[in-house]
Amino acid sequence: MRATLEELARRAPHELVGLVTEDWGKRYGRAARLGKNPSKPKTRINETGEDVRLLLRYVHR
Image (tube, rainbow, N blue to C red; front, side, top):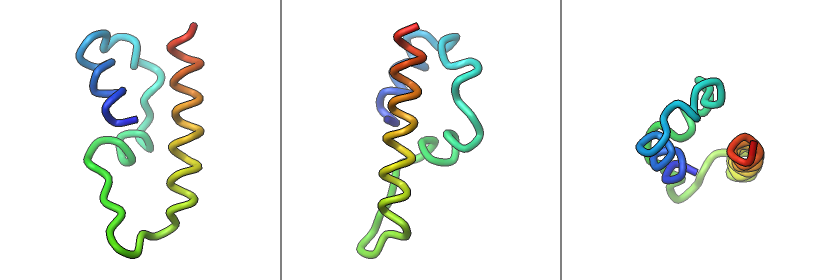
């Protein structure tokens, strides 16, 4: 997700206006570090999946 957002920001930053939220900035603004005992890994995976679906719908439009 982070790599995709970085590529979109590089190629078409205007496409991210209205899509990227503060929550996305917190989740994808820096490298993810899950560590040995990640907190709530299922929640993170589910949030990322939902964000990917939203991004795909947005880009498809």
